[in-house]
Image 1 (tube, rainbow, N blue to C red):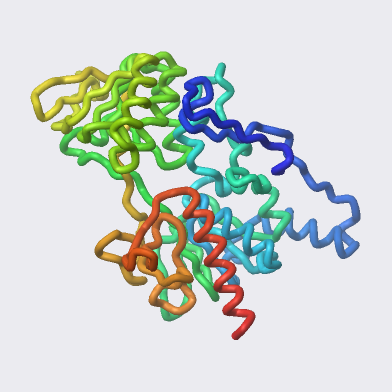
Image 2: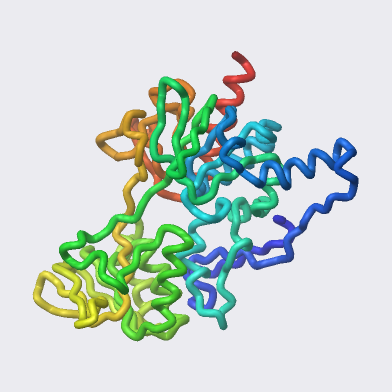
Amino acid sequence: MASGSSISSNPMSFKHGLSLWCPQSSPSLHRTLQSSPSSSIGFKTFFRNHVVAASSSSFANENREYVIVGGGNAAGYAARSFVEHGMADGKLCIVTREAYAPYERPALTKAYLFPLDKKPARLPGFHTCVGSGGERQTPDWYKEKGIEMLYEDPVTGIDIEKQTATTISGKLLKYGTLIVATGCSASRFPEKIGGNLPGVHYIRDVADADSLISSLEKAHKLVIVGGGYIGMEVAAAAVAWKLDTTIIFPENHLMQRLFTPSLAQKYEELYQENGVKFIKGASIKNLEASSDGHVAAIKLENGSTIEADTVIIGIGAKPAVGPFERLGLNNSVGGIQVDGQFRTGIPGIFAIGDVAAFPLKMYNRMARVEHVDHARRSAQHCVKSLLTAHTSS
């Protein structure tokens, strides 16, 4: 719960990580079944914890008033909003490709990557909504609130006319309102230049982060491609592993879209004091493999080669549109186009978070924001808007 977590932040400390928020673990509070199943309260708790938790195919095939596709930050905050409005119990289903309940994704490139002696963040410590000081929504929380969770079962198609969504396991979900919260996927290097070699990593979910940690445990020379958030945060964690770390990026300084040259210089000096090296203004030609097929080096366009046994690619992301192209895409910023209430062009279908392209009236243009704060706020705004519309109609 929120009262059992603390948020620590020190943007200039490699002990705690770059701009780190890290909810500390605390014992979960579990509701026990005090009354017998024959009582009304006991039966309701029993139903939630056992019938809803089962998520059988027959249960999933029944009508759902609200279905959220995606299990990231936006989904977790949307679920909280449905609960706050009393519209979740028995009415809401969340379908996710991951094996976990929604969590605060930024932790994956921060404290999650710390070595064990630095007390790394682990689930359930950073489930939504602890990142904004809210309650920790563990899997038990969803059961208690009567929310159906379908794990590791991504949506592969929708039928707009029939208002159904089909999952990879074959479940057919009938919905009244559909909210697309699929976020983004990591931009990748092409396979032909070594983008899929063993030892090359991209970070977007817990499985990605776990794979990277396995490599960091054996790594000696780490190369990070990209000078943005991911590059800086992973490099900060790498310092704790005491690795030979190099960051390569094409810009003139770190975070060129956000930092002034003088601010970037301050951070670069801090990293250099901790042993991190920079190669600026560089473009990657290809990644080279050793005789066993594992990544061994990065070759630059200028002909130079940097040895590496582990490589992390952090060159941005692209909206995870998947099977939702029919909803209408925005050609300028990408993603699914929505209006000011996050409604798509199809009645009853909404899009929130990183995948949504929305009108920014202040600048009279469309925008798409890949940031956790936007994921949280767009989810809350969308749910409030759609429930208000349902109430007034």
